Image 1 (tube, rainbow, N blue to C red):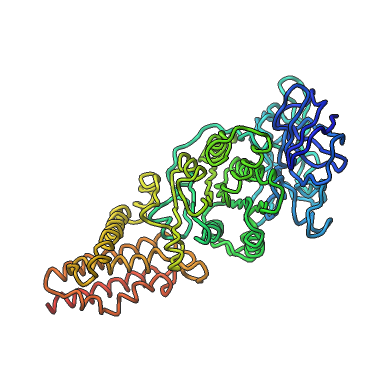
Image 2: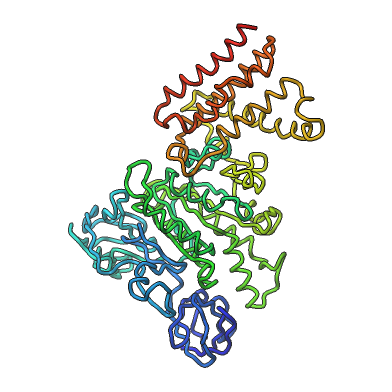
Length: 584
């Protein structure tokens, strides 16, 4: 038990804390606010408080718990909405109203709900941490595997029989090699700042499909990889992340709203329960966990929310699931680090951020990966983080340090957003180092042609950018006929492939096969038209073909599942150009 001696916003100092340890959770003041020790000097502890400290005075008590900041992992996570320190917001609303009361303590997992449990192990078997004790059908989309905590191993002396249980009920009794008896409930706790262990990290080999053409085809992210979406205000970061969360082919989706505006997070909380899972037709929330920590919530909890989300992601990864984690946005998280660092009177680095900003970002992104779990299954965590550089300046510290740890960059462009081109991902600035990683996967489905057509399309778009400078100086009429064709086909690529309507029932999601045939059709049109022009067909005749407009609308006019119709359409389009060639 200690006493408060100093209060500076969310940072509190207390004396008499000699028996405490780093990162220990403490209760601060008479209202028992939740805090975490982040610095120890002799018997003085510096604590970051995860709640509003208004009214807290020197002399009030500080009580240690002896535990690090941890999350509860067990049945009840799926479909829940938590704050930055894993307090269920829906339960808080029922008990305390629309505002989060200070000092409120609520279990993350429901204690009164019973779950149907089916055991998979028997008494007398040897068991290690991370292995599966049994199953709970948490939702129709998720079979929740009850895992042995990673630090426990020994012999099973007792296992719960098939039936319905609460999370606090006894699931198993383990006798350790030291002769101690450990009782295991249906959940366990894990420190949020400690990565969960695994057997082996695997090389990446498959793409995480998102249904967004500019991402899947041009700048893919591998399953278990890291990607970042930097962009200025109004460029569509949040909507892009919503699309990735709604349509990615991950088994579990974890969406972290870290320091975002309340109205944006409200849109997530309202829209997600209404969305349907594209694979099963079930509600998307049946495989989703939301962490909501808006900009008006305590800044310390914003710093913790990233770790809360990634720890839950690793837990589902340990069950053998592929998890997609969206963090919106890491810039707000970095601002929380800067504010706390300033109150600790630490020496600032560039733009006031703490010197350890890069290492903290690295700790977060390095928890992604595709691994062999302790139980021998294969699971992955893919991280996609939004970055909000002030004024769209990609040279600011958070963006620059983030680029050191990610391998796919989806750079949002203010100019594209102002032209209503969404997603506003600039194809000249963006990049992906996963092209070679996912090439074999694509080649198996496209006859080895995916990379070839992707490269040809990128050449056309890059040539268009070079020609724009000439057009600005001398006008489009001064260009040679073949260069005019390049500009026209680049427009077809932009309008008919890269631009995607998130609110259109067909265009909002495009399966990989349709993506390839759309791209192939446009590139084949270019080479067919180029050959026709070599044989005397003027560019004006090609430009007047009505099929050009139809090509740009094929993405939304032809249903996703009707690939035969799409192939027939492009065959007809090429025949129209060939007819001009024959006439010439």
